[in-house]
Image (tube, rainbow, N blue to C red):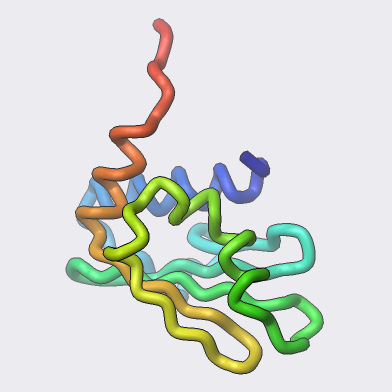
Length: 112
């Protein structure tokens, strides 16, 4: 996994575990540049929102967006992630609990 994606994922998982809001006023903590794209998470209560867009502002295809967010959503069953394409961004929505559970079940074992 890309270092930036790993940093973002760790921050999002930690916030969910702490029941802390994932807000846009802390955008750098919960988002970042992944290649030619910007990925941003935000969410409160039980719904997690992720958007992906191209840095150059050009239209993004659904296929491009899916490739970019694979590190975040690839471990989740496809039926529980809702996706809404827009002309220059793609938005993903999933329950906090599902996101956390899927990532914790697939986490590699830690060694002391």
